[in-house]
Structures are given as structure tokens and as C-alpha cells.
Length: 93
Image (cartoon, rainbow, N blue to C red; front, side, top):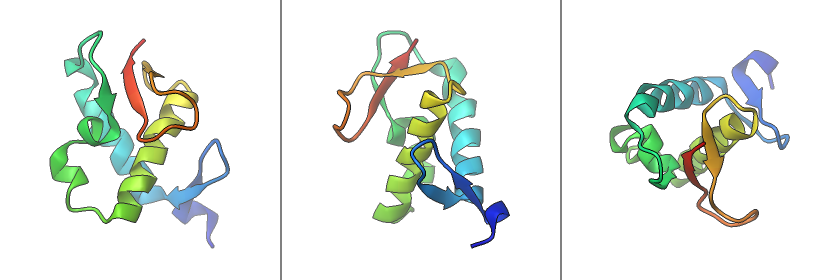
């Protein structure tokens, strides 16, 4: 497995770099339109045009990418879902 083709997330899980970069791009694009006090899912943050064509496995990977970006402080979001519960829900910090 070539290291430049994958990104290792905070929990050791590996995802395709291209998927990670697309998730980052999609979520970054919608950040300015998010409202305080509203709860968001990865599906909403990524957008339905990105989300629905993906397989269940790819959706899971995309959700892990969003969680990674939140944990690493790359996005001004916080978890509002208890640890270990899925799907993860987010709100603005």
C-alpha cells in the first residue's frame, strides 16, 4: 500500500487520499453557510450530490474523514454525539 495514496486518520484507519481531499474540499466549501445551534451530519456537510453516489463503504470512510478533521482541529466543529455512537453529529464551536 503506497503511503501517498492513503491518509492515516487519527484512529489509525486508512482512507484513500483522493477521498480525504474531496471531503475536506466539500466541507470547507459549506463552512461559511453553517449556523450556530444547528446539528449536522457528515452527509449534510459533504452535500447530497457527493454523498448519495457513494457506496456504503465510501460513505463510512467519508464520515471518518469528517471526524478526523474535527478531532485534529481542522474544522470549527464539535461532536454532539456521545462517544461510540454513530452516525456522528456536529455543530459549530
